[in-house]
Length: 66
Image (tube, rainbow, N blue to C red; front, side):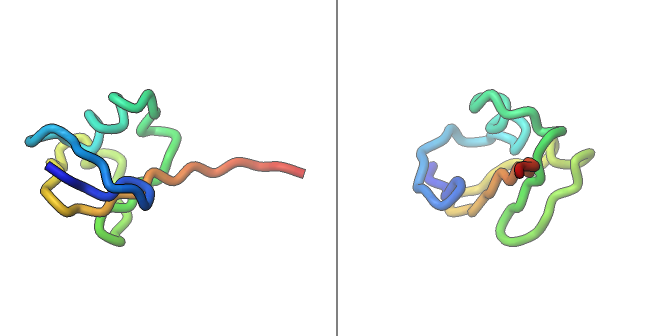
């Protein structure tokens, strides 16, 4: 199925959770903010959220710099 991930169209497997997607990209779900269809997901429930076709997901990380 097709989703939009960080602004880019991606093909992913059906019945994949947000956590599984992050894991497949070597992203630690506990170190980012996840936005799904313009709503911020709670970290505790993101592992249970199954992505659907045409979902828009953003993995947002914060860093400090100077």
